Image (tube, rainbow, N blue to C red; front, top):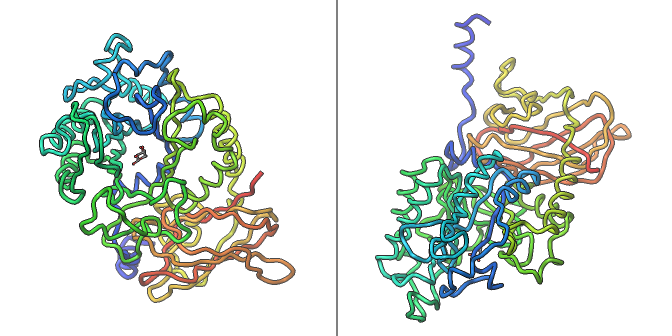
Length: 475
Ligand code: FUL
């Protein structure tokens, strides 16, 4: 088409208007990270606790064979895209030689006080092509100044030190547990803080934004990504990436984090955190309670499959290694997923729809659904919010997994959909779903067919926009 005509066509048919709160570029990238690992490791590993009081001797921290390369290798082989380390848990012991408290690896006889777990892991992650992130507990049961304004300065200084020394970091994690009894420099007392005001979170988040503009900040309510609201690793069937955080702050008892709110004021994607063991830290007594490959698969479909990112904790043991039982489970879990997603059975199908936004305009064609590129999409004309695409496969295939993705740059809009296959001369429905968002992966009954139909039955905004449609078969 001559350039003048092309310009006229582009002017006549703009892309669909965006709907609701939209993700930032950094959030769009973050949704692609999908699955990464959590490393809980500190003095708790050696005291057999989940929450240290803050009076632990730094000498207790003494891994006999610490190998962060092993952690990174295990993570990478499990298909994780990054690792987030508890640089400091509630007990206050810092795994790097911080300038901002003496309670750190510097005061431990481990490696003669010259050890640096954060530095080692940042290096190992880079060597294995993994992203690196840090968890820094706001609650510090060791620090004498905890609950006074002076401690908030220490917390920020530690964050800045971590980012500047070990960055780039892809995610910064603030958990919500806060206040209570602790050592507090020897005071051994109960200290509570005002969750709404004590930390002045907006200032801390502005500082992170300055130091690490690409990093996503996790807390119960973002601002980068939000907690799923449970520690089982499951998001909701119907899940919106948008919520209205208002004046909510980490640690408040917030409802509906998994479902979100289609009218939410902010895009704050869902992250589901869960441990491969009952506890977050390693306990030898839980060596036989490692989640099975099948349990991990359920979690994966319940989180990644519902558009959330999955943060799976794999706690190193007292040697400073990921335990053999955890590795065995992860290996089989990965094998099952790889075998499932080996081949997109819709590749090479012909696809069409009666509802295409503009004729002969490659930007909106249903064929864009089949290229596994979330940047290209099928779109309907304005006013059409229920429509179908039909596919003819190159040969009959058995299918029991369906994957759909929205083009989230234009907002999350699909409310409901259904899938039909052609059998005995008619369409038969074999699956239904609600929200899609960055991803929706459904396990269905196993059907065999050479014709499929996807019906979008409910959609926000003026038009349907959908990025990807693929199908698989479980081993
Ligand atoms: C919680 C903490 O209290 C747990 O120990 C763990 O770190 C979990 C991920 O976050 O708030």
